[in-house]
Figure 1: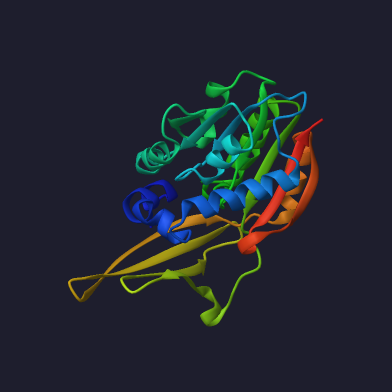
Figure 2: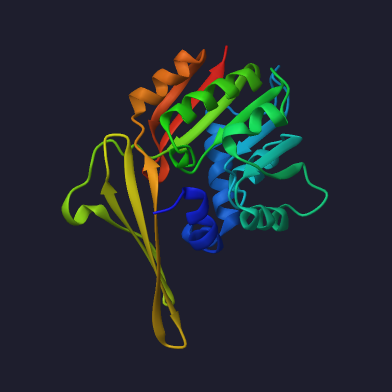
Length: 251
């Protein structure tokens, strides 16, 4: 087992857009609709500057730009995914890709009380090493947001363990690739994710596999930590693809 950063860089980064369905444009439209529905728009007193933590290939960053945010800083630990985002964004673009650790990025990238929005979507938050990192990140978000600024998190609540064959989750497949995920419940705080990627090359199937730990964050706990950080939770419900959607604002 390795870290989530190493796992994505060496197994999943090249397949990430394929995992999402292969159509980045459609995914951008979906994310823009979600953010628009939550009211995350650059038309209030908080301004028009946003940060996308764990941007991946950039669906959320591109959605923020499409919604009118004039400055979007896209942060990820994978240079491959940042390069992919840059290719989609083109030039000139309001999106600035930054290779950085999510746990330390915000204080370095934004002065206090200057951001209109921070998003951390696509289950990124559960990739942090420990729950203490989540608490520290929420504190950094609170400090970076301007009054009225938005925080949007999407993640999977893995606190209810699956059993038996329900632990085997098909991610995506086509005629040349099959990605299957297996969950192993390690302890109360962590689930070990095993990814099995079968690829057909010249008619023969090969297997690449890897594992990494993922945090088990309950909806009640995360909403409580937002409130403890003086962020007002205005929406907290299950959304598309089974992801929990949490929307909070700095009062």
